[in-house]
Image (cartoon, rainbow, N blue to C red; front, side, top):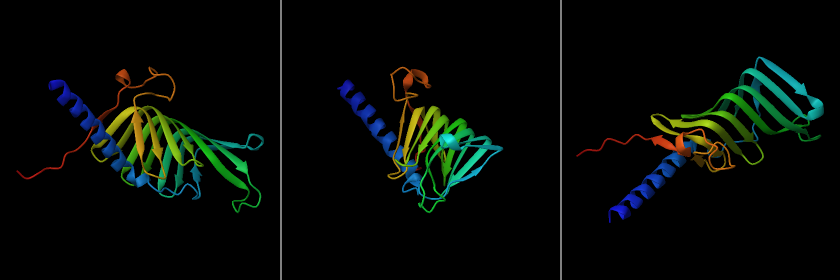
Length: 183
């Protein structure tokens, strides 16, 4: 009986954590990845032969109300003549060095991030934190789906071998506020 209650409690906590994580990410839902991407940095180096731009030093990227900050970013693009965007379309942004993604009241932090504009996914790795107000989730990896608004946090730092973690024991932890109820 005690084991059954423990398993039910664990299942409930896991489900509650997933529901709260999904609720937290709602400001990322239906993000317009086709909106213009604006860059601001100390240095921008265009590597035209490699179809990429390296941006470094206090980098700030904005797109449709979302802000991405990092120490360094590499932007992969492709030339698309006649696309209406001066022939350049951004495919992916790789960010490193104290990466912070903010939109509305949600903030995600990690060591590195990959923003795949085609699949509308942001994957953050290493010392990941997802916050909304006093609610907070921490782990090793965060995947944010910008279409559905669903976020998934796990304890692994990568999708690879279990054991490659940045959180103790490869676990996710969280703190959630509870509304005050009248007795």
